[in-house]
Image (cartoon, rainbow, N blue to C red; front, top):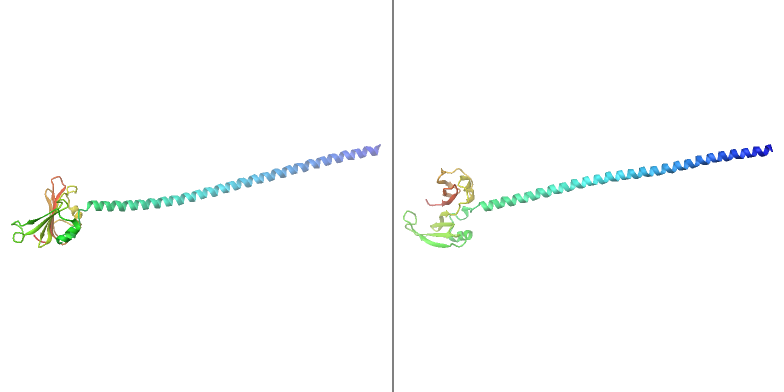
Length: 221
C-alpha cells in the first residue's frame, strides 16, 4: 500500500514537472516565433525605409536633372529669342546701307533698289548738270530720288522717314557709323561732312522731331 502511494506521488510529481517543462517549452517556442516575426517586421520596415530613401534620392536626382534641362532649354530659348529680336530690330531700323548705291551706275543701283518708277532728264542751271544733262531716277514709289552725275549715283534723296526720330544717332539707319556731326540745328537739320567716303549727308526735321528726309552728296558739291 505504501509502495502504491509512493508510485502515485512520483507519477504526479513527474506529471507536474513534465507539464511545467512543456509550458516552458511552449512559452519559448511562442517567444521565438514572436521574435522571428518582429525581426521580419523590422527588416520589412528597414527595407521600406531604405527603398523610400532611395526613391527620394532618385526623385531628387531626377528633379535636379529636369531643372538643369529646363534651365538649359530656357537659356537656349532666350538666346534664340534675343537673336531674333536683335535681327528683327536691325532689319526694321535700317533704311539702307547707302554705300551699296553711292557712286554706283544705274544698272548697279537697280540691283539694290529695283527698276525705277520713272526716269527724267535733269539740267538745273545751279547744278553741275547745267552743261551736261544728268539723269534723275525715282525708285520704290519715289522713296529714293537719285541724280546720276557723270553716270554715277551722286545726289541721293531718301523720303518717307517720319517713323525715325530726328537725332544724330540715327545716322546708323543708313549703314553708317555713329560720329559727331559737323553741324547741328535741333530745329532744322543735322549735317555730317566727309563720312565714310561720302562728301556730305544731311537729315531734316519734319517739325515734329522726326526725320522728314535725308539728302546725300556722294562726290559732287
